[in-house]
Length: 290
Image 1 (cartoon, rainbow, N blue to C red):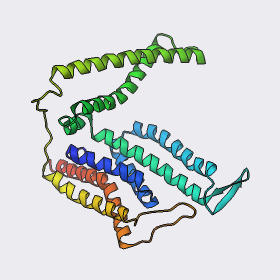
Image 2: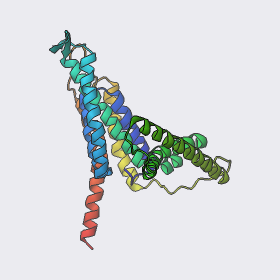
Image 3: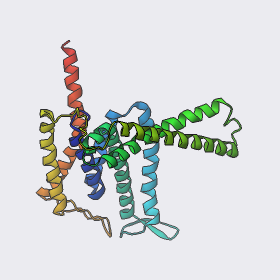
């Protein structure tokens, strides 16, 4: 998605996140999860994959198991726990909720990897300059704060802190890191604001630099994306994708419109993978001709 126009990438990711959140259908949720995982495999390194799996898998297990334990809705009991029924419907709802949460996190990470701060400013800088700048700086500082926190922690260790291994020592050292990080963040924020003010940000007559152009490949990609999105919205709006978890699992009839909506959403979810595969194959073909 990085090779496409920022407006197209922004619209795609926002549409995928919103559809995944609001179309509560197991087929749609599973398609979003599979498509997100395929996309995630391309834009993450091996280290990032290990870290993400270490977070996603426990989170999915927690959400899946928590719902049937605390929610006893449903008409099909699987077994009884402390006199309360653990139902199949609650378990399926928990599993779908876990898949939804993980899918949204993956697509949000794909958004942050693709729609960078300069692209966000390009899209909204001329319309909402102050809001766009605040959001861009905030999103930029989140990964920066994490990196700076690791650097400060390593510096603290090099001068002998964290040596005792006690809770008090760790707490005091963490407080020092927090104070140093807060001070550095405020200093960077003031410097960024002065720099942007000196460059005339938000003033009338200022024309932002734009190196993005809507090209032929963007138009070619926009046609199937718009078509798939329209089909999914039509199917969801007509109720063809409505799924009921309680009191019993009720899958909507497999009408032509529902099947079309499932197929369109599946293609929509796999679009980044298809696009990246096509780019990789073209690159390998060009290399083989050298």
